[in-house]
Image 1 (tube, one colour):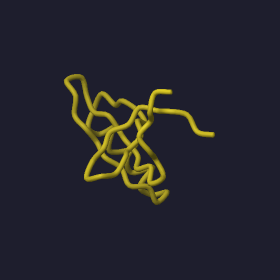
Image 2: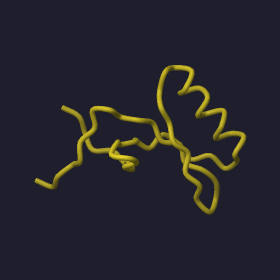
Image 3: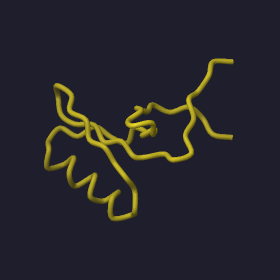
Image 4: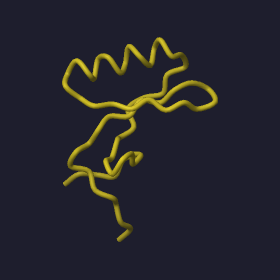
Length: 65
């Protein structure tokens, strides 16, 4: 059984939180590592840096019990 994790929805797909990066260069290195493994990723900008998200094709919206 899986557990809920922080995620965003983009174009009908869910992307799970991976890591915060303080610089564009560090974020790009993190994204490149996941892309090399065959993952689709998204980077979002926040005031203090960037957040890396990885595509979770089997993810579903969590419901409160």
